[in-house]
Structure formats: structure tokens, C-alpha cells
Amino acid sequence: MPVFMSFIKKPLQKLLILTLTILSVGLTDIRAQTINDVIERYDLSPQMISYHPNGEWIMSSSSEGENPYLLIRIDDVKTTEAEIDTLDYGYYSNISKLSNDGDELLYGFLDTLKTERKTYLRTYEDGTFSEPVDFRKKTGLNALTYFMIDEPGNVYFYTYDLDPKGIYKIEKTADGYSEPMLLISNRPNYVPFSPLLIDETTMLLAQHGQDDNSVNGIYVSKKENSRWSTPVKLEGLPYGWSLGFGEGNSVIYLIAETKKVRMITMPEIEERIHKVLSR
Image 1 (cartoon, rainbow, N blue to C red):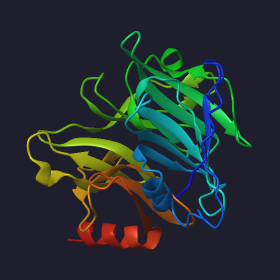
Image 2 (cartoon, rainbow, N blue to C red):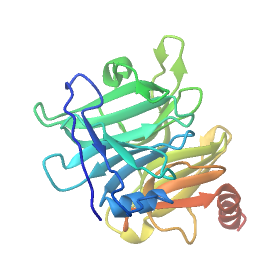
Image 3 (cartoon, rainbow, N blue to C red):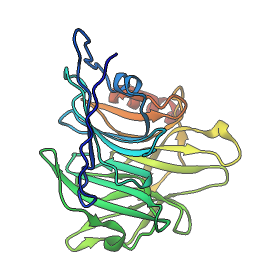
């Protein structure tokens, strides 16, 4: 398929560094029906994905080349012209997530010049990102990853920098954020991460093993008496991460083996949860 690519260099102080526009040529129709069509057509390798209510996707993607890790914004995949903006600083190992309402973007990356992880928060409105807020300075957290931001602005995340390691929560306050609160800790051969609260008492999460990959999967935990229960594995779902809300009443995540997006309707999720918890 013929493809034209235009690259527009912008200052490092801006979030938008490159613009890559893919145009249809002649009789070629590049209409993309799903996000997986875009991933396959342009040979993207997503590490994290987020869906915005306006139809956009934000993706942390790895690929071969000068910028092996990219933070990408993809316009509505149902449009006839697919436009991809790369939002990368030229640093590596980036992890990103939109808030559930799409109003904020939290992203972290490894600064290869200083060999330290940085984390920034930006508001997002009408396709425009605000100036960055240094999230490490604001919270005192040196390492957080695989995060989720709920509508009040509370942040759920995995960290290896606190003891014990595990999934934590910080609540948004009038003047900043609370101290981190442990929700689910690592257990022998179980590492919980990538949390998604589908209601106040139900958390989906990914979990992988340290020595036994057979435990890898998508799990559910219920909040009972102000404590989160030991996660239980949902049957029939391939292992992956970057859980979030998708179009309509659905949950999305990245399948580890294929790096494609899996979408599951909420009724199906609820049925799978009921099946494993009712035993």
C-alpha cells in the first residue's frame, strides 16, 4: 500500500514532537474499522493503551528504529483518514494512561540521559495537553507504573519502590494527594498490577508469576469490610495488562502474546466474575 509520511520537528518542551500522517493514495482505502486494524496495518507494538470517550486512542508503543518507544495519539479509527501523532520525548520505557473520564494523562518514562524514571501529569481538553506537572515532586513517589485514574482523580498504581510491593492508591485532596495506601500486595509467585475498578467494590487486575507462568491471567478482587480480597483468576481470558474502559459499556486490555486489544462487554465481565466467585 502506498504511504506518504510527513515528520514535523517541534521543540522538546512541547509534548507533541512528531506528526506522522498516513494518507490514502489513489484507489487505496485505508479506512480502519478497529484499533487492531491500525495496530496491524502500521506494525505498532503497544505496551499500554487508553481509549478516550471522543474516539481517540493513546498508546505507548515500541518499535524498531531511532525511537523504539513512542507515546502515540491515534484519531478515531473509524475515520477514512488515519492520523497518528507521536508524543514521545526520545526517552525510553514509557508507560501511559488516560484517566477514566479522559481529562488527564499520566505517563512515566526512563530518562536515558540521567537513568532515572520520570512521571508527569497533564490535563487533556479538546485535543490539547496542558503543561506538565512533575508527579514525583507532587506525590513524593519515585516509581509508579501501570496506573489508573478514577473520575475524582484518585490514582491506583503498582510500585516496586514501597515495602511491600503491590497495588497502591493515593487519593486526590484539595492541596495534592494523600499518602499511599496498600490495596493488594505481592505474594509468593503472584505479582498484581494494572488495576481497574469497575465499581467501588470490584477491581479487575492483571497478575503474573515470578517462577510459574501458569498463574498469569486476568483476576478479580472484591472489597469486603474495607479490605480487598485475594484475587481470583477469571476463566477463559488470555493474560494481558493495561486494563481500562473502552467504547460503550466495555473493558479493554492488551493481550500479552499478540499485543492486540481485547474488548469485553461489561455483562460478559460480570458473568465471568459471578462464575468464579459463586463457587
